[in-house]
Length: 68
Image (cartoon, rainbow, N blue to C red; front, side, top):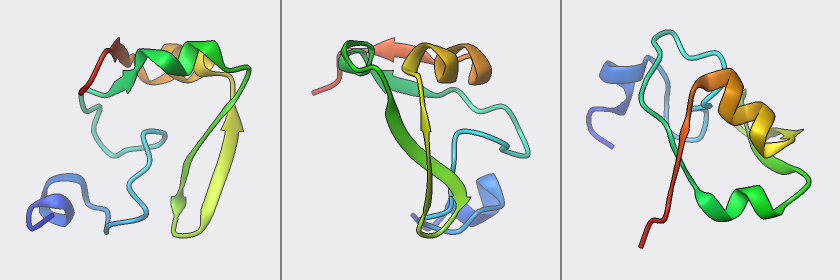
């Protein structure tokens, strides 16, 4: 949390995987692929967007993983 603003340029709650100033490695739990759509931050506190998981993965070059 202490490094979020200096690393990403965003404050907590507005750190969206879409539209980042830099392309960061992004990992999404593999279970997202079982849903037709998921909601992610739209880059502003309190604002989310609905997106197909594979479309998000393709757009931001994310990788799926089984996280514990």
